[in-house]
Structures are given as structure tokens and as C-alpha cells.
Length: 152
Image 1: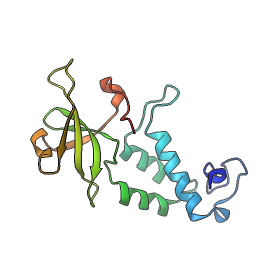
Image 2 (image 1 turned 90 degrees about the vertical axis):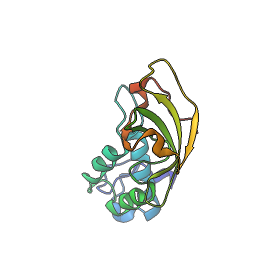
Image 3 (image 1 turned 135 degrees about the vertical axis):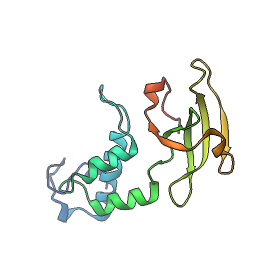
């Protein structure tokens, strides 16, 4: 599987340029996951995409990435995957630490209140408490707010 992770359905991948019909479902899934990982992290001066932007980008390339595998990833990870930095309507930034069955965060780590530029927080909130910081608005890039990626 590792050898085929950079292959593409249209045969433009590497190292062997195998067309999609010769790639197992597992390799096609791994290729989607790898592409999403690359797209959602800053690299070589390129800004990271949000998960939703990355999903759209891969969906627009059905000749290269297995759309069925992409839909399975979206179904499991949702629009706010674990490790995403979420902006809440109350002006708070929080790392998504766990999601429920519908992809909605059920546990977050609040790290910033944008009303206080120099202050950082370290507060975990569970499902019943998250509404204290507002509604989840969208996912943002940590670099935009001077935050490192969430440590794994």
C-alpha cells in the first residue's frame, strides 16, 4: 500500500504510473487521505486549505482521485475533522478534539479569545459546554493567528 499511495486513477502518479483499475480500494483510500493531509497543511510557502476546500478540490478531480473513497472520508471525518482549528461566533478559536456521528465537534480545546490579542487559553469544553463560545462558524488556518498545528 505504501508504494502505491502516490498513484492516481488516471495513471499520472508515481512511482509506476499505475492506472486506477490496477489500484486496490485500500490504495485509492490512502491516496485520498494523503492528498487531504498535504492540502490541509502549509507547505513550501503554499497556504493550507480548510478541510472543506480540500474536499472540493479532490472532488473536482475524479480522474485522479476515487470519488467513492473521498465520500467515505467525508462521511467519517465530517466538515470539521479532529485537529481542525475552528472559529466560533463568540470570537473564540478552538481545536476540534472529538466529533460525533454527524461530524459535529463534541469536544474542543479553546486556545484563543480574539478580543484579547496577546492572551492564550487552554480550556477543554465538552458537547454541553461548547455553546458558551458561540456557534461553530468555519475552520481557519492556525498560521493566520500565529498558532502552531495541533500536536498529535
